[in-house]
Image 1 (cartoon, rainbow, N blue to C red):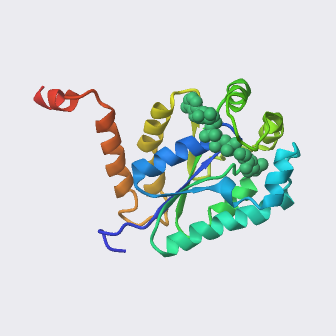
Image 2: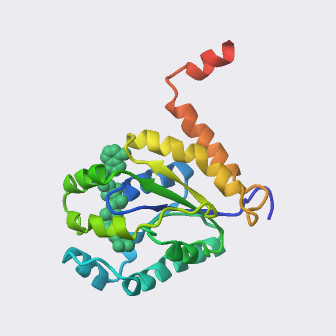
Length: 211
Ligand SMILES: Nc1ncnc2c1ncn2[C@@H]1O[C@H](COP(=O)(O)OP(=O)(O)OP(=O)(O)O)[C@@H](O)[C@H]1O
Ligand SMILES: O=C(O)[C@H](O)[C@@H](O)[C@H](O)[C@H](O)CO
């Protein structure tokens, strides 16, 4: 792999419904300049109907959906493209399948209290997912294990802070993988530096440089 074309690295923004996956992933893809795939859009129609009717999905319902997501990640990796993907990825067994994506894969777990998530779901309009299913999602959730490539972020922070934290932490998780090329984390480090600079009050960088 040449140093001008680092190996792609996919980011999966995971967590129970209402933690902000779509909001965070869309902004993250913009910051990183990569494509964004909304995992919910790949659910078979029967899954959407089931959730809308208030019935939690089973493993059997989720496997075909997870297969579609990992197939999209593999396709893009073959083309040399990285993706930011939203997927609840609630169980370790699901993530083991998703991580086999043909590229370095980093999981960003959006995590928060039941009360906070429930109030955000309550404030959301026009979405098929009923607030009542939140408890089943929380019961099913298996947090990231220490041997998984990813990290958790607290969703109590405002969206822009959450995003900056993710941008700061991402490069280490991209670069640390044995399957990462020597330059895999370079675009992430550059994007993180741009995002830090943009978040500073105007002129702060210049004043700091003068001191
Ligand atoms: N950090 C935040 N601070 C305040 N509100 C937020 C934050 N993150 C997300 N939200 C709001 O919370 C609600 C849920 O967010 P979003 O729809 O992105 O969650 P989601 O995890 O994608 O949900 P689902 O899996 O059900 O599609 C939205 O109304 C969104 O605007
Ligand atoms: O694994 C699942 O049970 C589903 O993926 C749900 O998490 C929904 O897709 C989503 O969160 C609703 O918007």
